[in-house]
Length: 350
Ligand SMILES: Cc1ncc(C[n+]2csc(CCOP(=O)(O)OP(=O)(O)O)c2C)c(N)n1
Image 1 (cartoon, rainbow, N blue to C red):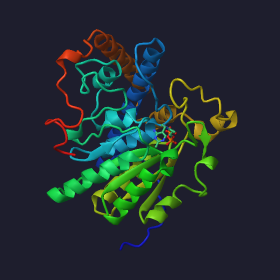
Image 2 (cartoon, rainbow, N blue to C red; image 1 turned 90 degrees about the horizontal axis):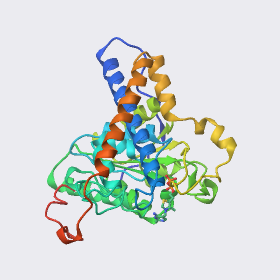
Image 3 (spheres, rainbow, N blue to C red; image 1 turned 60 degrees about the vertical axis):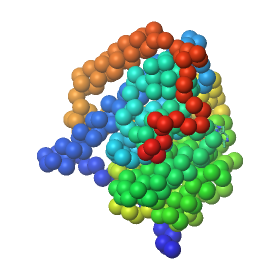
Image 4 (spheres, rainbow, N blue to C red; image 1 turned 90 degrees about the vertical axis):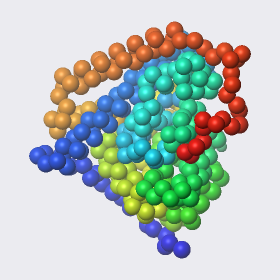
């Protein structure tokens, strides 16, 4: 039985000095992560506008303010890994290989999308590529990733990791407990990233859990804990990079807890008026995208001109893709052949 491991605090492994290949790799990783955050932000702004103009059916839940944490997990996963994103993980999804085109096709109900216009917005994935479609019931994805990892173990696939994200509210569910416990007992290469955005919808943390520090849950399960600053891209990349590497080395489940604030309502139907102004103005409320841009420019890893041209290019791509998808055909019920419970094309590589 492995001994309970104490939570760790890891600081960023990404240094600002320049001149060797490690620095070049760090620079490219940071630039790629920032560009992906920008894509997620501008894509979600478009989704919010489409929702308000009545073009999207169902809810729209955004990850504004959580892109640094989300992307940091997505960029550290690779082909053969399992990724189960949650509602605020547009940035992680894009980093894991999802596209602006397929995202818009799903939200706008195009029959040409991977969900063929049949499923709502965030419940999209490609299980055969290890990209799990989200189940709404909070905590459930911990178990689906554990199941996928056990399947890989049976097949003798040794180097894959499985990862999921969850809000702090989701850590209060029975599913989270069962999944974490199973991962710990089986010593699975699981990485769980907890975005502690202080509110579970409108419920504040003191009505959600009684421990003084969420990271102490790691000790309770006997897994390694890491702490990241949720709106600091460099820190998120360093800490999550270490957590993913440790899981890949066979060191068992890793729990990352990051404090931040979502800079929008729970969904686009919510104005977040329950979040106090003082909290919004505190360091927690600083915009991770703006901080990442400043940090890249200060290091001279991105010029101001490049930042502007990236913004314009992504905006253009989002606009053009949205116009194209709005003209695509909706699903035709008479043509449907996709079964509710099993489909030969799904599930081979869970
Ligand atoms: C088991 C379960 N209970 C309730 C809900 C409804 N619900 C969806 S999101 C949400 C709030 C989640 O809060 P948190 O886990 O902190 O994530 P955040 O929204 O803050 O990112 C709730 C209550 C659900 N999906 N599943």
